[in-house]
Length: 281
Image (cartoon, rainbow, N blue to C red; front, side, top):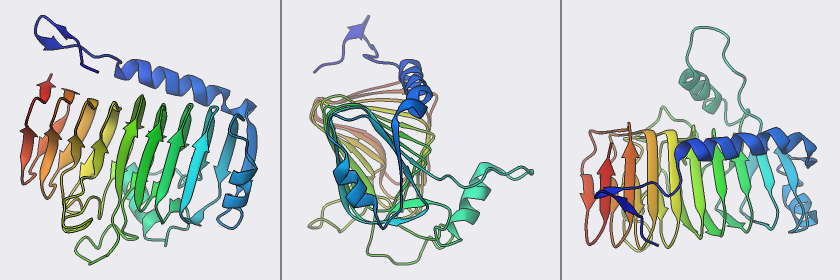
């Protein structure tokens, strides 16, 4: 799928405002969905009870969740218990940091690999993914107010850890991230047979939409975002800072359209290769 051009410029095939409106509309309807409250102990058994053609909302209690395969055929929502909002003068990031230092007690954390096979709309809100995430199917898939990173304590950036977090999206439609953070031990060098594993990878016909999100090193030791094959990226208000390799790689026949974003202090900068296309506005 090639992105159309208007007078030589890349033309968005879908826009960030449309994505946000669709997401907001779905959340408004969420209370009417069949709702199940789960804990790490019964999550898998409750997940198996859900029919693939059933719309539902699954509320994740705080705690550490294991490896799982989530497959849907109708719209569904997975929502974690977010840390309490700060009522003082401290910002949201300070609250999140304090929450992480409390041994994940106020987060719903997937500590092991997660496979998401989306054949209809699926939304994850307020969930921490501390390992690899594989997204397939037709989508669309939304991540809102989610964390991606393997370390328990964000403050210990130099502590060695065999685990790392990354997202590989290979979907036939949209995969969107809004208000998300990619932090400590995201991406890896020397893993997976010695090859670099970027933090966020879009392949195939994937349409990535990243909005109001940040990739922050030095915990990100490899490329932040990599596009290959025919993947598309639209990014708005994205910050990629101090990554160990490239901020963005656009390769093969993929393309990226970036609005009002900041890429700074990363070792490799931006790399457009093969027949990739990049436009920054």
